[in-house]
Length: 327
Image: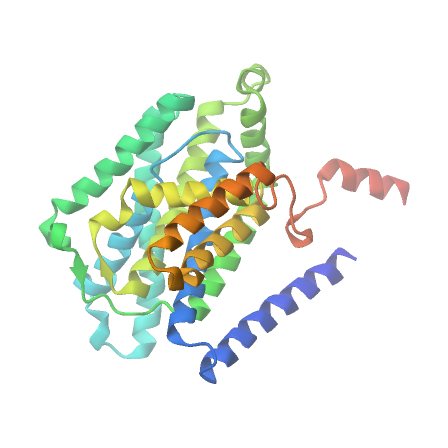
């Protein structure tokens, strides 16, 4: 039964991509709408990665955009500075682009690991202040590096990101997060969120698992940054400021903490809403703010807080054993 349900999900995903691609080829889906969809996909990856830290591990990071910036610049340097891939044949460009995304994720993950070592021993507001400080430190450091354009920004990035790559990496991120949460690592993180003192009493190395969660989330943010840079073809350090991190916090809390499905809905809907309100000119920000306030008043847990789509659920091992014994 689970295999049949899984196959249905895969078929729906493939058909969804083919539908979007067909609408794009026919010109029904113009470049503006297509870019909104791709930005929504990138934001979904970022929100899910933040959810691993804030939602499932119970920490409070507010400098997540810094890791996105590190990944974006690292990935862009590979394709723009090291290899100048825009003049290379296509069959070389694609593998180098994929390598650049992995490099971006690894560099962001490494920095996340180095930052997590000292900072994740802190809790609550203290951790929030430290992660905010490190996020701004990363942004300010990029401004001082002339090699990547400094405060002027890095231009000439080839546009390798398209609907296929965003769709693929969004799906991979969703399933990677689902598998992490339902692994022994994820269960340890959830126990830390519920009661860190009790987790330590049960022999769980809380600092170790918080660092693992933080590093994995930083890696995902780095990959999202690489996609972002190769979509917009220009990077500027101030793009990844504190305000960008706040956007992802809004997506997370509006969608629902501790819910991968909520991250998908929150990032997808709130990416599209400001664009669809653009006809209201300066009033769109006011309307957007009012909608957020009403949402949180009516749905304090977000769009889908505490719930998951069927394909993101997994049968727990103890339930599986009971089922096998009963049969």
